[in-house]
Image (cartoon, rainbow, N blue to C red; front, side, top):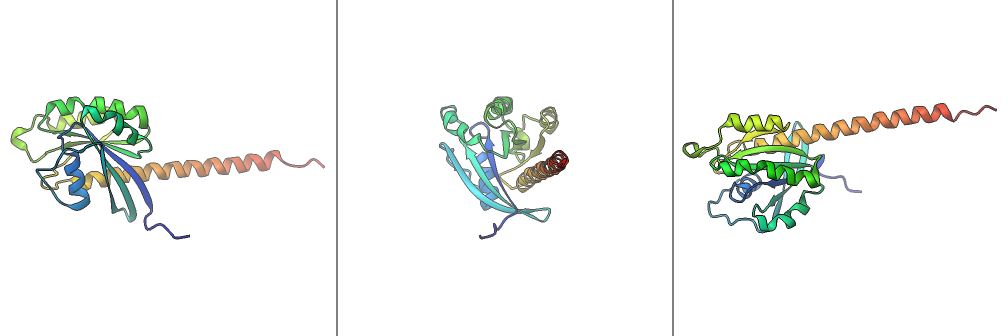
Length: 199
């Protein structure tokens, strides 16, 4: 049997309003490219990307979902089985930030236990900023999420966002494994104690 060329495989889904830069974040991270003329995603798109985090090889399956209302029934199916969800808003659009809670509620219907990360994109547009960093951080803290500001335009902190998410998923996986080992160990102890013969 062939050994996998990675230590972990995680499914990550990008959600948020149309136009916040989800596709541009995916392109920047996966291909290190940027296009201002990128057409809005119709339905879903996805890419694979491999990275190394703390010496571990991580393979990410990243799903970019459409933000338009008419695609909600299609895209919601892709939340199932997601290990991590990145909620993206546009720092120059207060509406997109206000809609983050709606997206979070929608995701939690199908993938409540997935790790969440809040991303404030278009960090480079300082003159047009409507959502200050403190506000994004405060919201994320209240929801027990990490918060990162990115720029798909110049690439600032885009890779960091995926590294932070990957690190959290590795940690969660390790904790589950340790808990499982403890349960298995306790089960064996109980079994050996109750199956003794009285002959």
